[in-house]
Image (tube, rainbow over all chains, first blue to last red):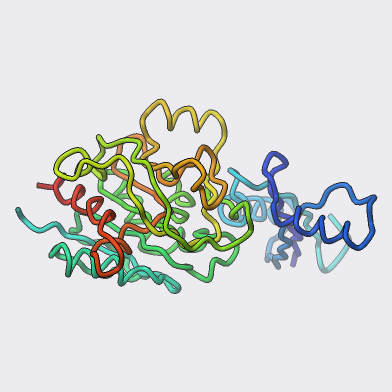
Length: 87
Length: 228
């Protein structure tokens, strides 16, 4: 059994108005040293796969087909063997 | 004039399906049926409407889950064979996610849900969706309602140039009346072949004077005319 931890974020070139609103709020708390705020999504999958290569391949497919829209989003992930060490 | 066969796709969370049905069936007197998202075939329809709403609760991304509904396989097949597909509001988001139109709809730049009437310039009248505005109606600008939180059209620079070069931008918000921050004031586009339209404003909510106007009705009438 594998666990995939996926981060989906707006592409750098795209303005993130939600991030901007949160950034203004952070600055109003007095944290003038926060320079940029971006908001994304975090998704976890449990995967039944025979090895980490297969688990990564499945995760990548699911990300590119459904979990992220390449027009506006980037994704990254890590795959962990939940029975053993990090792959 | 023979009647056209319209199919209005219904997803869990669609909420403009009945407005579209009412316009087509009761105002324009066309053969109109609802199609459930689990259906596998659209049958012998001439035109498919993907209506507005919040399909699947807008979970993940607007339109991302609806795009993989059973019926969408047949809608994509139909569109790729030249069949007429109109995606309105959430329907625009769904046809973009399905790859029938380029680009995507981002969160409104204001972060606010936009619910108002907007002025739209008809950028291309030589389409099956807008031909009526050349003839007896003769309008360059119409007013239609918008109601959305994610209508901020976005695509990359090359795609934008291609849309412009091919006359694929069908509607633009009047300068100063862009409710969502959409790139180049884009409110509605079609594919290169001209058989798939996506637009954020709601023509089906503006098709009889009792609801404030009928500018939108001519879009459906143009489509019907193109089939005759």
